[in-house]
Length: 166
Image (cartoon, rainbow, N blue to C red; front, top):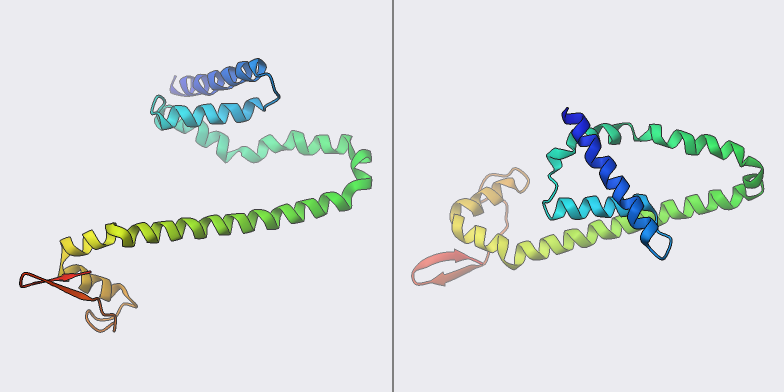
């Protein structure tokens, strides 16, 4: 019964996205509308992941199966594609390189933002709360060296007779 409920939710989202696509004055893929709708429902917590987890895991694990019809249909249009094989291969190669570059740039940007956020307050607050124990743990984690032997020095700030790390 649980699987039928999950399939019903997914089919209902697909059906609503088809209706939205038909009502739009411009062409837009219903599958993308469905994904956006699913994202919005999950983000607003109207729909919980548990409501669709099993069926979506099944669909994701068998995703390659859904590419078979598209791959087979290429054979029907082989005469059209025969003259453009070089162009298609070049496009595939360039888009692969572009995808790698954009992904690397995005990961680098996210890491920079995370490090900036960590040094702007989150890490300092944790160090102040933990005191010397946190510094010793950080030093021990650096190269698995003995605490105090890493050579890394944190600047000290004196405040009313007690030591704080900046």
